[in-house]
Length: 185
Image 1: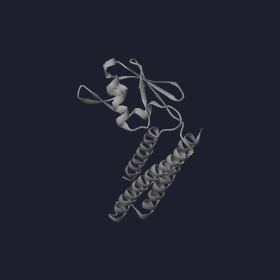
Image 2 (image 1 turned 60 degrees about the horizontal axis):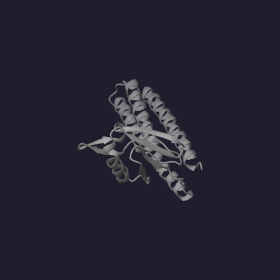
Image 3 (image 1 turned 135 degrees about the horizontal axis):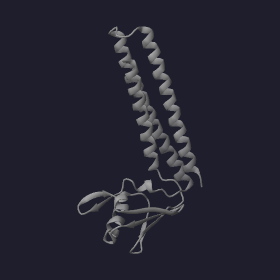
Image 4 (image 1 turned 90 degrees about the vertical axis):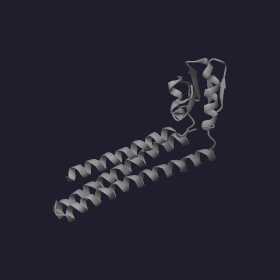
């Protein structure tokens, strides 16, 4: 029973860290990344379709993203969707290909983005601690119902705390890497 509680807690904490990493891919740094366009949806015959399913996304240079749609008539729709996504990028089309230059970030914008990253990581730490609380509550209930001994309950609570510490440290590592990437000129 206690192994199940610890296993579920580990899984939930892992999901919180993975979610943080996924959110970080959408944060714009000074470099081009096709993951910036993950949330862009284009109206394709009345259906909002992910941009990656409508053409080839490439990064020919560190500060340039190109989109080559499989259907040329989609060029204006793709441009409209990028503008609507409000990414701070300006697409330019030559009739065949859409190019988007990634402008370098200003120092103020970098600091603002670091603050945003710290808020995101703090939210993740709160989520991890909430998982810890739920797991500890489940263990206390088992101990109260005399399904496990007090010693086992203490041991499992310590295991859950160690797990929490490990995942909080992992969140700090992830934000440190992303922060370095954002501050890089």
